[in-house]
Length: 373
Image (cartoon, rainbow, N blue to C red):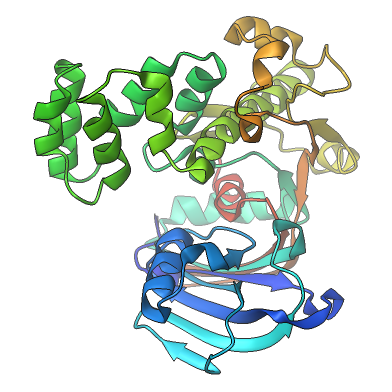
């Protein structure tokens, strides 16, 4: 089977209740429809086209590149505006003015419509069995998007938490295992094999790897890896440590299922396999269960005890006095994600499936459940 053959095959729409927002003139809200571009790059283009700072643009959630997505953005102090803007693969439509910016907590749900092509008869049979089990709930694991295109965000995050800044920078710059661009592979491989030759590597790294080039430019002058972190955007640094937090949560849930239900069924991801069960009655018994994400303020110190021993992480390392934004805080996450408004159709080995999920749940993880053996 083939997923995301083209952006039209993966449609995602943010569902936000704007009626709860206080009307005002500070923030202009637009519905942004984008094709084949991620949210961060779309924001950069909008800022450039409108001749404003990207810091004035707020959004609630990030959406992937290889999709057609609809999400809301808010622009601060943007008074001379039009009702519509068309920037090619980015379209904006004005929806109202409010006194507050967008926040991730504003998202209620995400709607998905996914086209899956070239399904084999075996895959259709597997789907028909699994859809009976997972028509209401599936296991709420973080999926590959959380761990980055190269699948190494959580590794970088762990090194940052351990204050091993050299290895954090090294993995960020040199890991080429899941790299797709040939020039980037060549550059990363060269630096991996010739660590320390930053000037030579800088000449090889493609211009689009602007963060990597900024780090290399700094390291070629001063080899201070902790200071080199300042050339990584704060948003990306937080993403690294939160990715590690997500990885640990996945391990916690997987270990729980393994210890209580066995190892018969599992989901494959870029970073390994995580266990699931295929007993609908047993799954529904877990619908109100939550596990905490690891944070220095976690209430139950024992729940991650074995995992932290295995990972060689201390609770004290989760708090950053010098970089408070990197401090990991504990929140609870449902171990099951609920599926709403499920519809699907299979015709000529092509499936179109649509559903609604709570924010923070991964549609790709649901698809993996539906085709798990």
